[in-house]
Image 1 (spheres, one colour):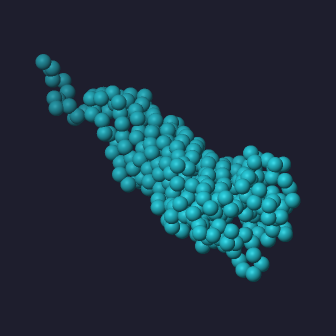
Image 2 (cartoon, helix red, strand yellow):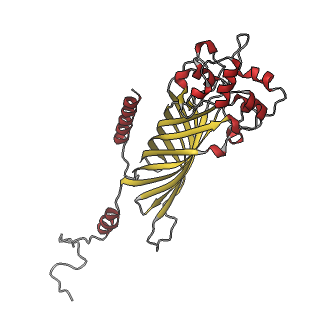
Image 3 (cartoon, rainbow, N blue to C red):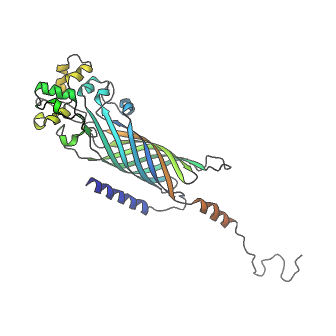
Length: 349
């Protein structure tokens, strides 16, 4: 179903590009290519000493992952362009990399392959058609722009079982499966497990904001750099948002994934009384024990190199030959009477 939706959205985007009005002033209007680079996430998992901070203060640069896209861009005029983009952003983070004792004790982690289909608008901020010398054979122009758009997100957060947590829950009598019989290499789909017993879908919306710069090389290729940050409408890219689920509705694997904390990680976090501290990291019928922060949605960003090929516009041959020849065409002398400075019948010396 998701694949069919992607195909439908891609087809609709292609029709929109094909139907866009062409302008005689927009040379080299259409280009298509790919983008590849880094990805970082900001949400409920990871972070530093304080509780969740915004943007760079909470990023785990050691958890920088890969992002890749293909795109088609059409320049409406010298100021505006629209861009359709399809690709995948890989996100991952771990509480045990944090310096916050509460997050370290919670001990959650996730990975998520976020599939994107986006439509973005670009606004030209500064451009210069030529930055090389006119005597150079290499023709290079520069363009800087800001972007804003909408992105369809299809995602599936996953996590692995933690052996210390499995052994802790087994010793406490919370599970009956012997920890030695569990698979600690498998990645489990957390949305299906229901770690918080709240239903959320695999699709969401995001709003990318960013800046970019591109260089046109010999009127044929565009090479650029883009930084984009996506503000999403979901808090479940990491499967952590609200409260712990009632363990009575979970099997042994679901309980370990929902409550991956243990005395071992609490001691590693440096808390004074690990066993008492663990009471805050499990479900309790008397009150809602927070597992995450539902007041802030998850966000993520990419820093990518873009490479594209111009596939429509004035070609080098047409530009270098047709326009020059048109300017140098000689007019035939008029034969109408009275157009010549010398009268008819006079001798020509």
